[in-house]
Every structure is written in structure tokens, then in C-alpha cells.
Length: 185
Image (cartoon, rainbow, N blue to C red):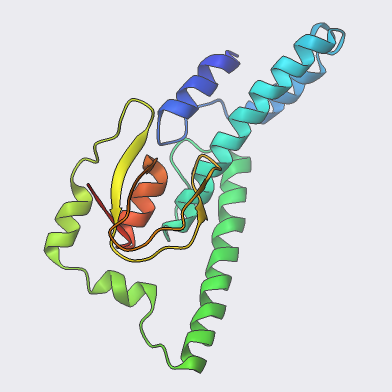
């Protein structure tokens, strides 16, 4: 198993990299193999690469669940499909609790209604290719004020005021574009 190749692909591609179904079993075997466990430096280096791979894959799975999609991401393992279902279930539960709160305070417009009200022009904008730089970032303009948030690269961005411009990770930009918070600038 070429861990560095997998890590490079995970960082480069927006979707999950195709791995064997027994990927996690193989990772445990690598970490527990005598040639790795006997050399502390090698064990730390391999552990760090595996940790980075797992972090990248978890971020992609969580971002996929945030898109209100009921199907697990392409190329996910059985363990990752289970994680996706659990995260999606938690998000749906949270959404329903928030909707109840919105009803109590008189707010009628839900995320699903906002999606239904999108114009054909907005959908065309979403389907256009997003221009990312060589580091996987996109320049966007905020269409409304936005509190600080954690991007898909686990760094904090913001807070932002209406019409502020910033460079943010493409995965984060896609979600904010989808929700009508930003536009590509």
C-alpha cells in the first residue's frame, strides 16, 4: 500500500480516493508490523501519514453529509459508509430540532424551501466550473455577513461582512456557494 500516494491523492482530489475494501484492516496491519513497531521514528512517520489520510477522508465524508445527500460518497469503504450514515442522521436530527425552534420564533423559511426557490440562473451558476488556484483555494465575495467558521482545511476563516472577499478552500466554497452565502469573484 502506497500511503504517500494515497495522501497526495486525498489532498489533491475533492472526492474520496479509491481504496481496497479492507483498507482500514491493512492500515492496522501496517502499524502493527514488526518492521514498523521496532523503529520508533518510522512508526511515528507512518502514523502521521495515516492520521492525515484519515483526516482528509473524514472531512470529505462530513462535507458530503452536509450537502443533504442520502447516498454515501463514491469510493467509501464499509466503515466510512457507516460513519456517513451516522453523521447524516445526526445532521437531520439537528435540522429538525432547529426547524422546531424556527417555528417557535416565527421563522417559516427553511433550508429546503430556500433550495426550492432557487432560480434557474442560480442553478446554472452552481453548475459552472469553479476556478481554483494551484493550492485548491477559490476567491469568493460574501453576499451577506458571516461569522467565523472552520474551513475544510480545519483553519478558521472570518468573520466576514457583506461584500468582503477572501480565498477559501474549494470544498468550503462549494458549500457556501450552494447555500447562497458567497459568489465566486
